[in-house]
Image (tube, rainbow, N blue to C red; front, side, top):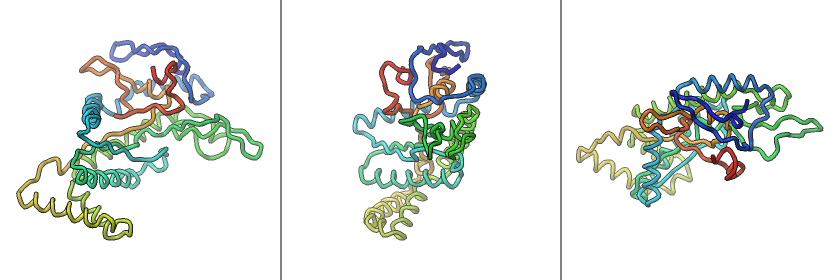
Length: 284
């Protein structure tokens, strides 16, 4: 049974009640039993993020709402399993970090860094059926549901892909944590990337003066002996659209600190234009 029609689930001995409401943009799963098995396995897996991390992001966003910080979000419209590689993740992370250094210096404000990654494996569609040369197949609904190739087998929704999406997201988050906490995101390293960009690209030459100013500021702090831990690691949060009711409900857990339910599939989840009906399952 689809979680959209399931009234409750149990976690840590507590029942999480789900209202029975219509759920838009949900895949036409062909095998309810296969879906139920995949969802049950998801519910037993560890969280991808921690509730405390979500609370930290909430505090950071509150500071941005007061004009005390700047929010920078970047990433792909839709992730694929094939592109979930170390090189791809590193390149996306590097881009956001490079932008954040420039914004921090130019605005003199902290930058809250959010990546659209580790969960963006679902795609909303205007039509559930795609027609090509007289052949009708299920539309591509994201790698967490089916494949992009236009064949009957590839386009068949496969609930096991929900587990692949979890595993791919877990791998991406592990790598991001290693990069951001292990020295790769050191401020001086990120500034060196910006210097390379300025030197090696025509577009980058426009930022040559700004890069020089940042370089002088870093040299001054180094001369003063300033070497805080904040230079060596950064906060980085993961975001995706909460589209699949089955996946997101399976990833909702009771926080042991507060007793409140948290969707621990990502730090920052949003509801899209096609699923923001006030009387439907996504908002509830």
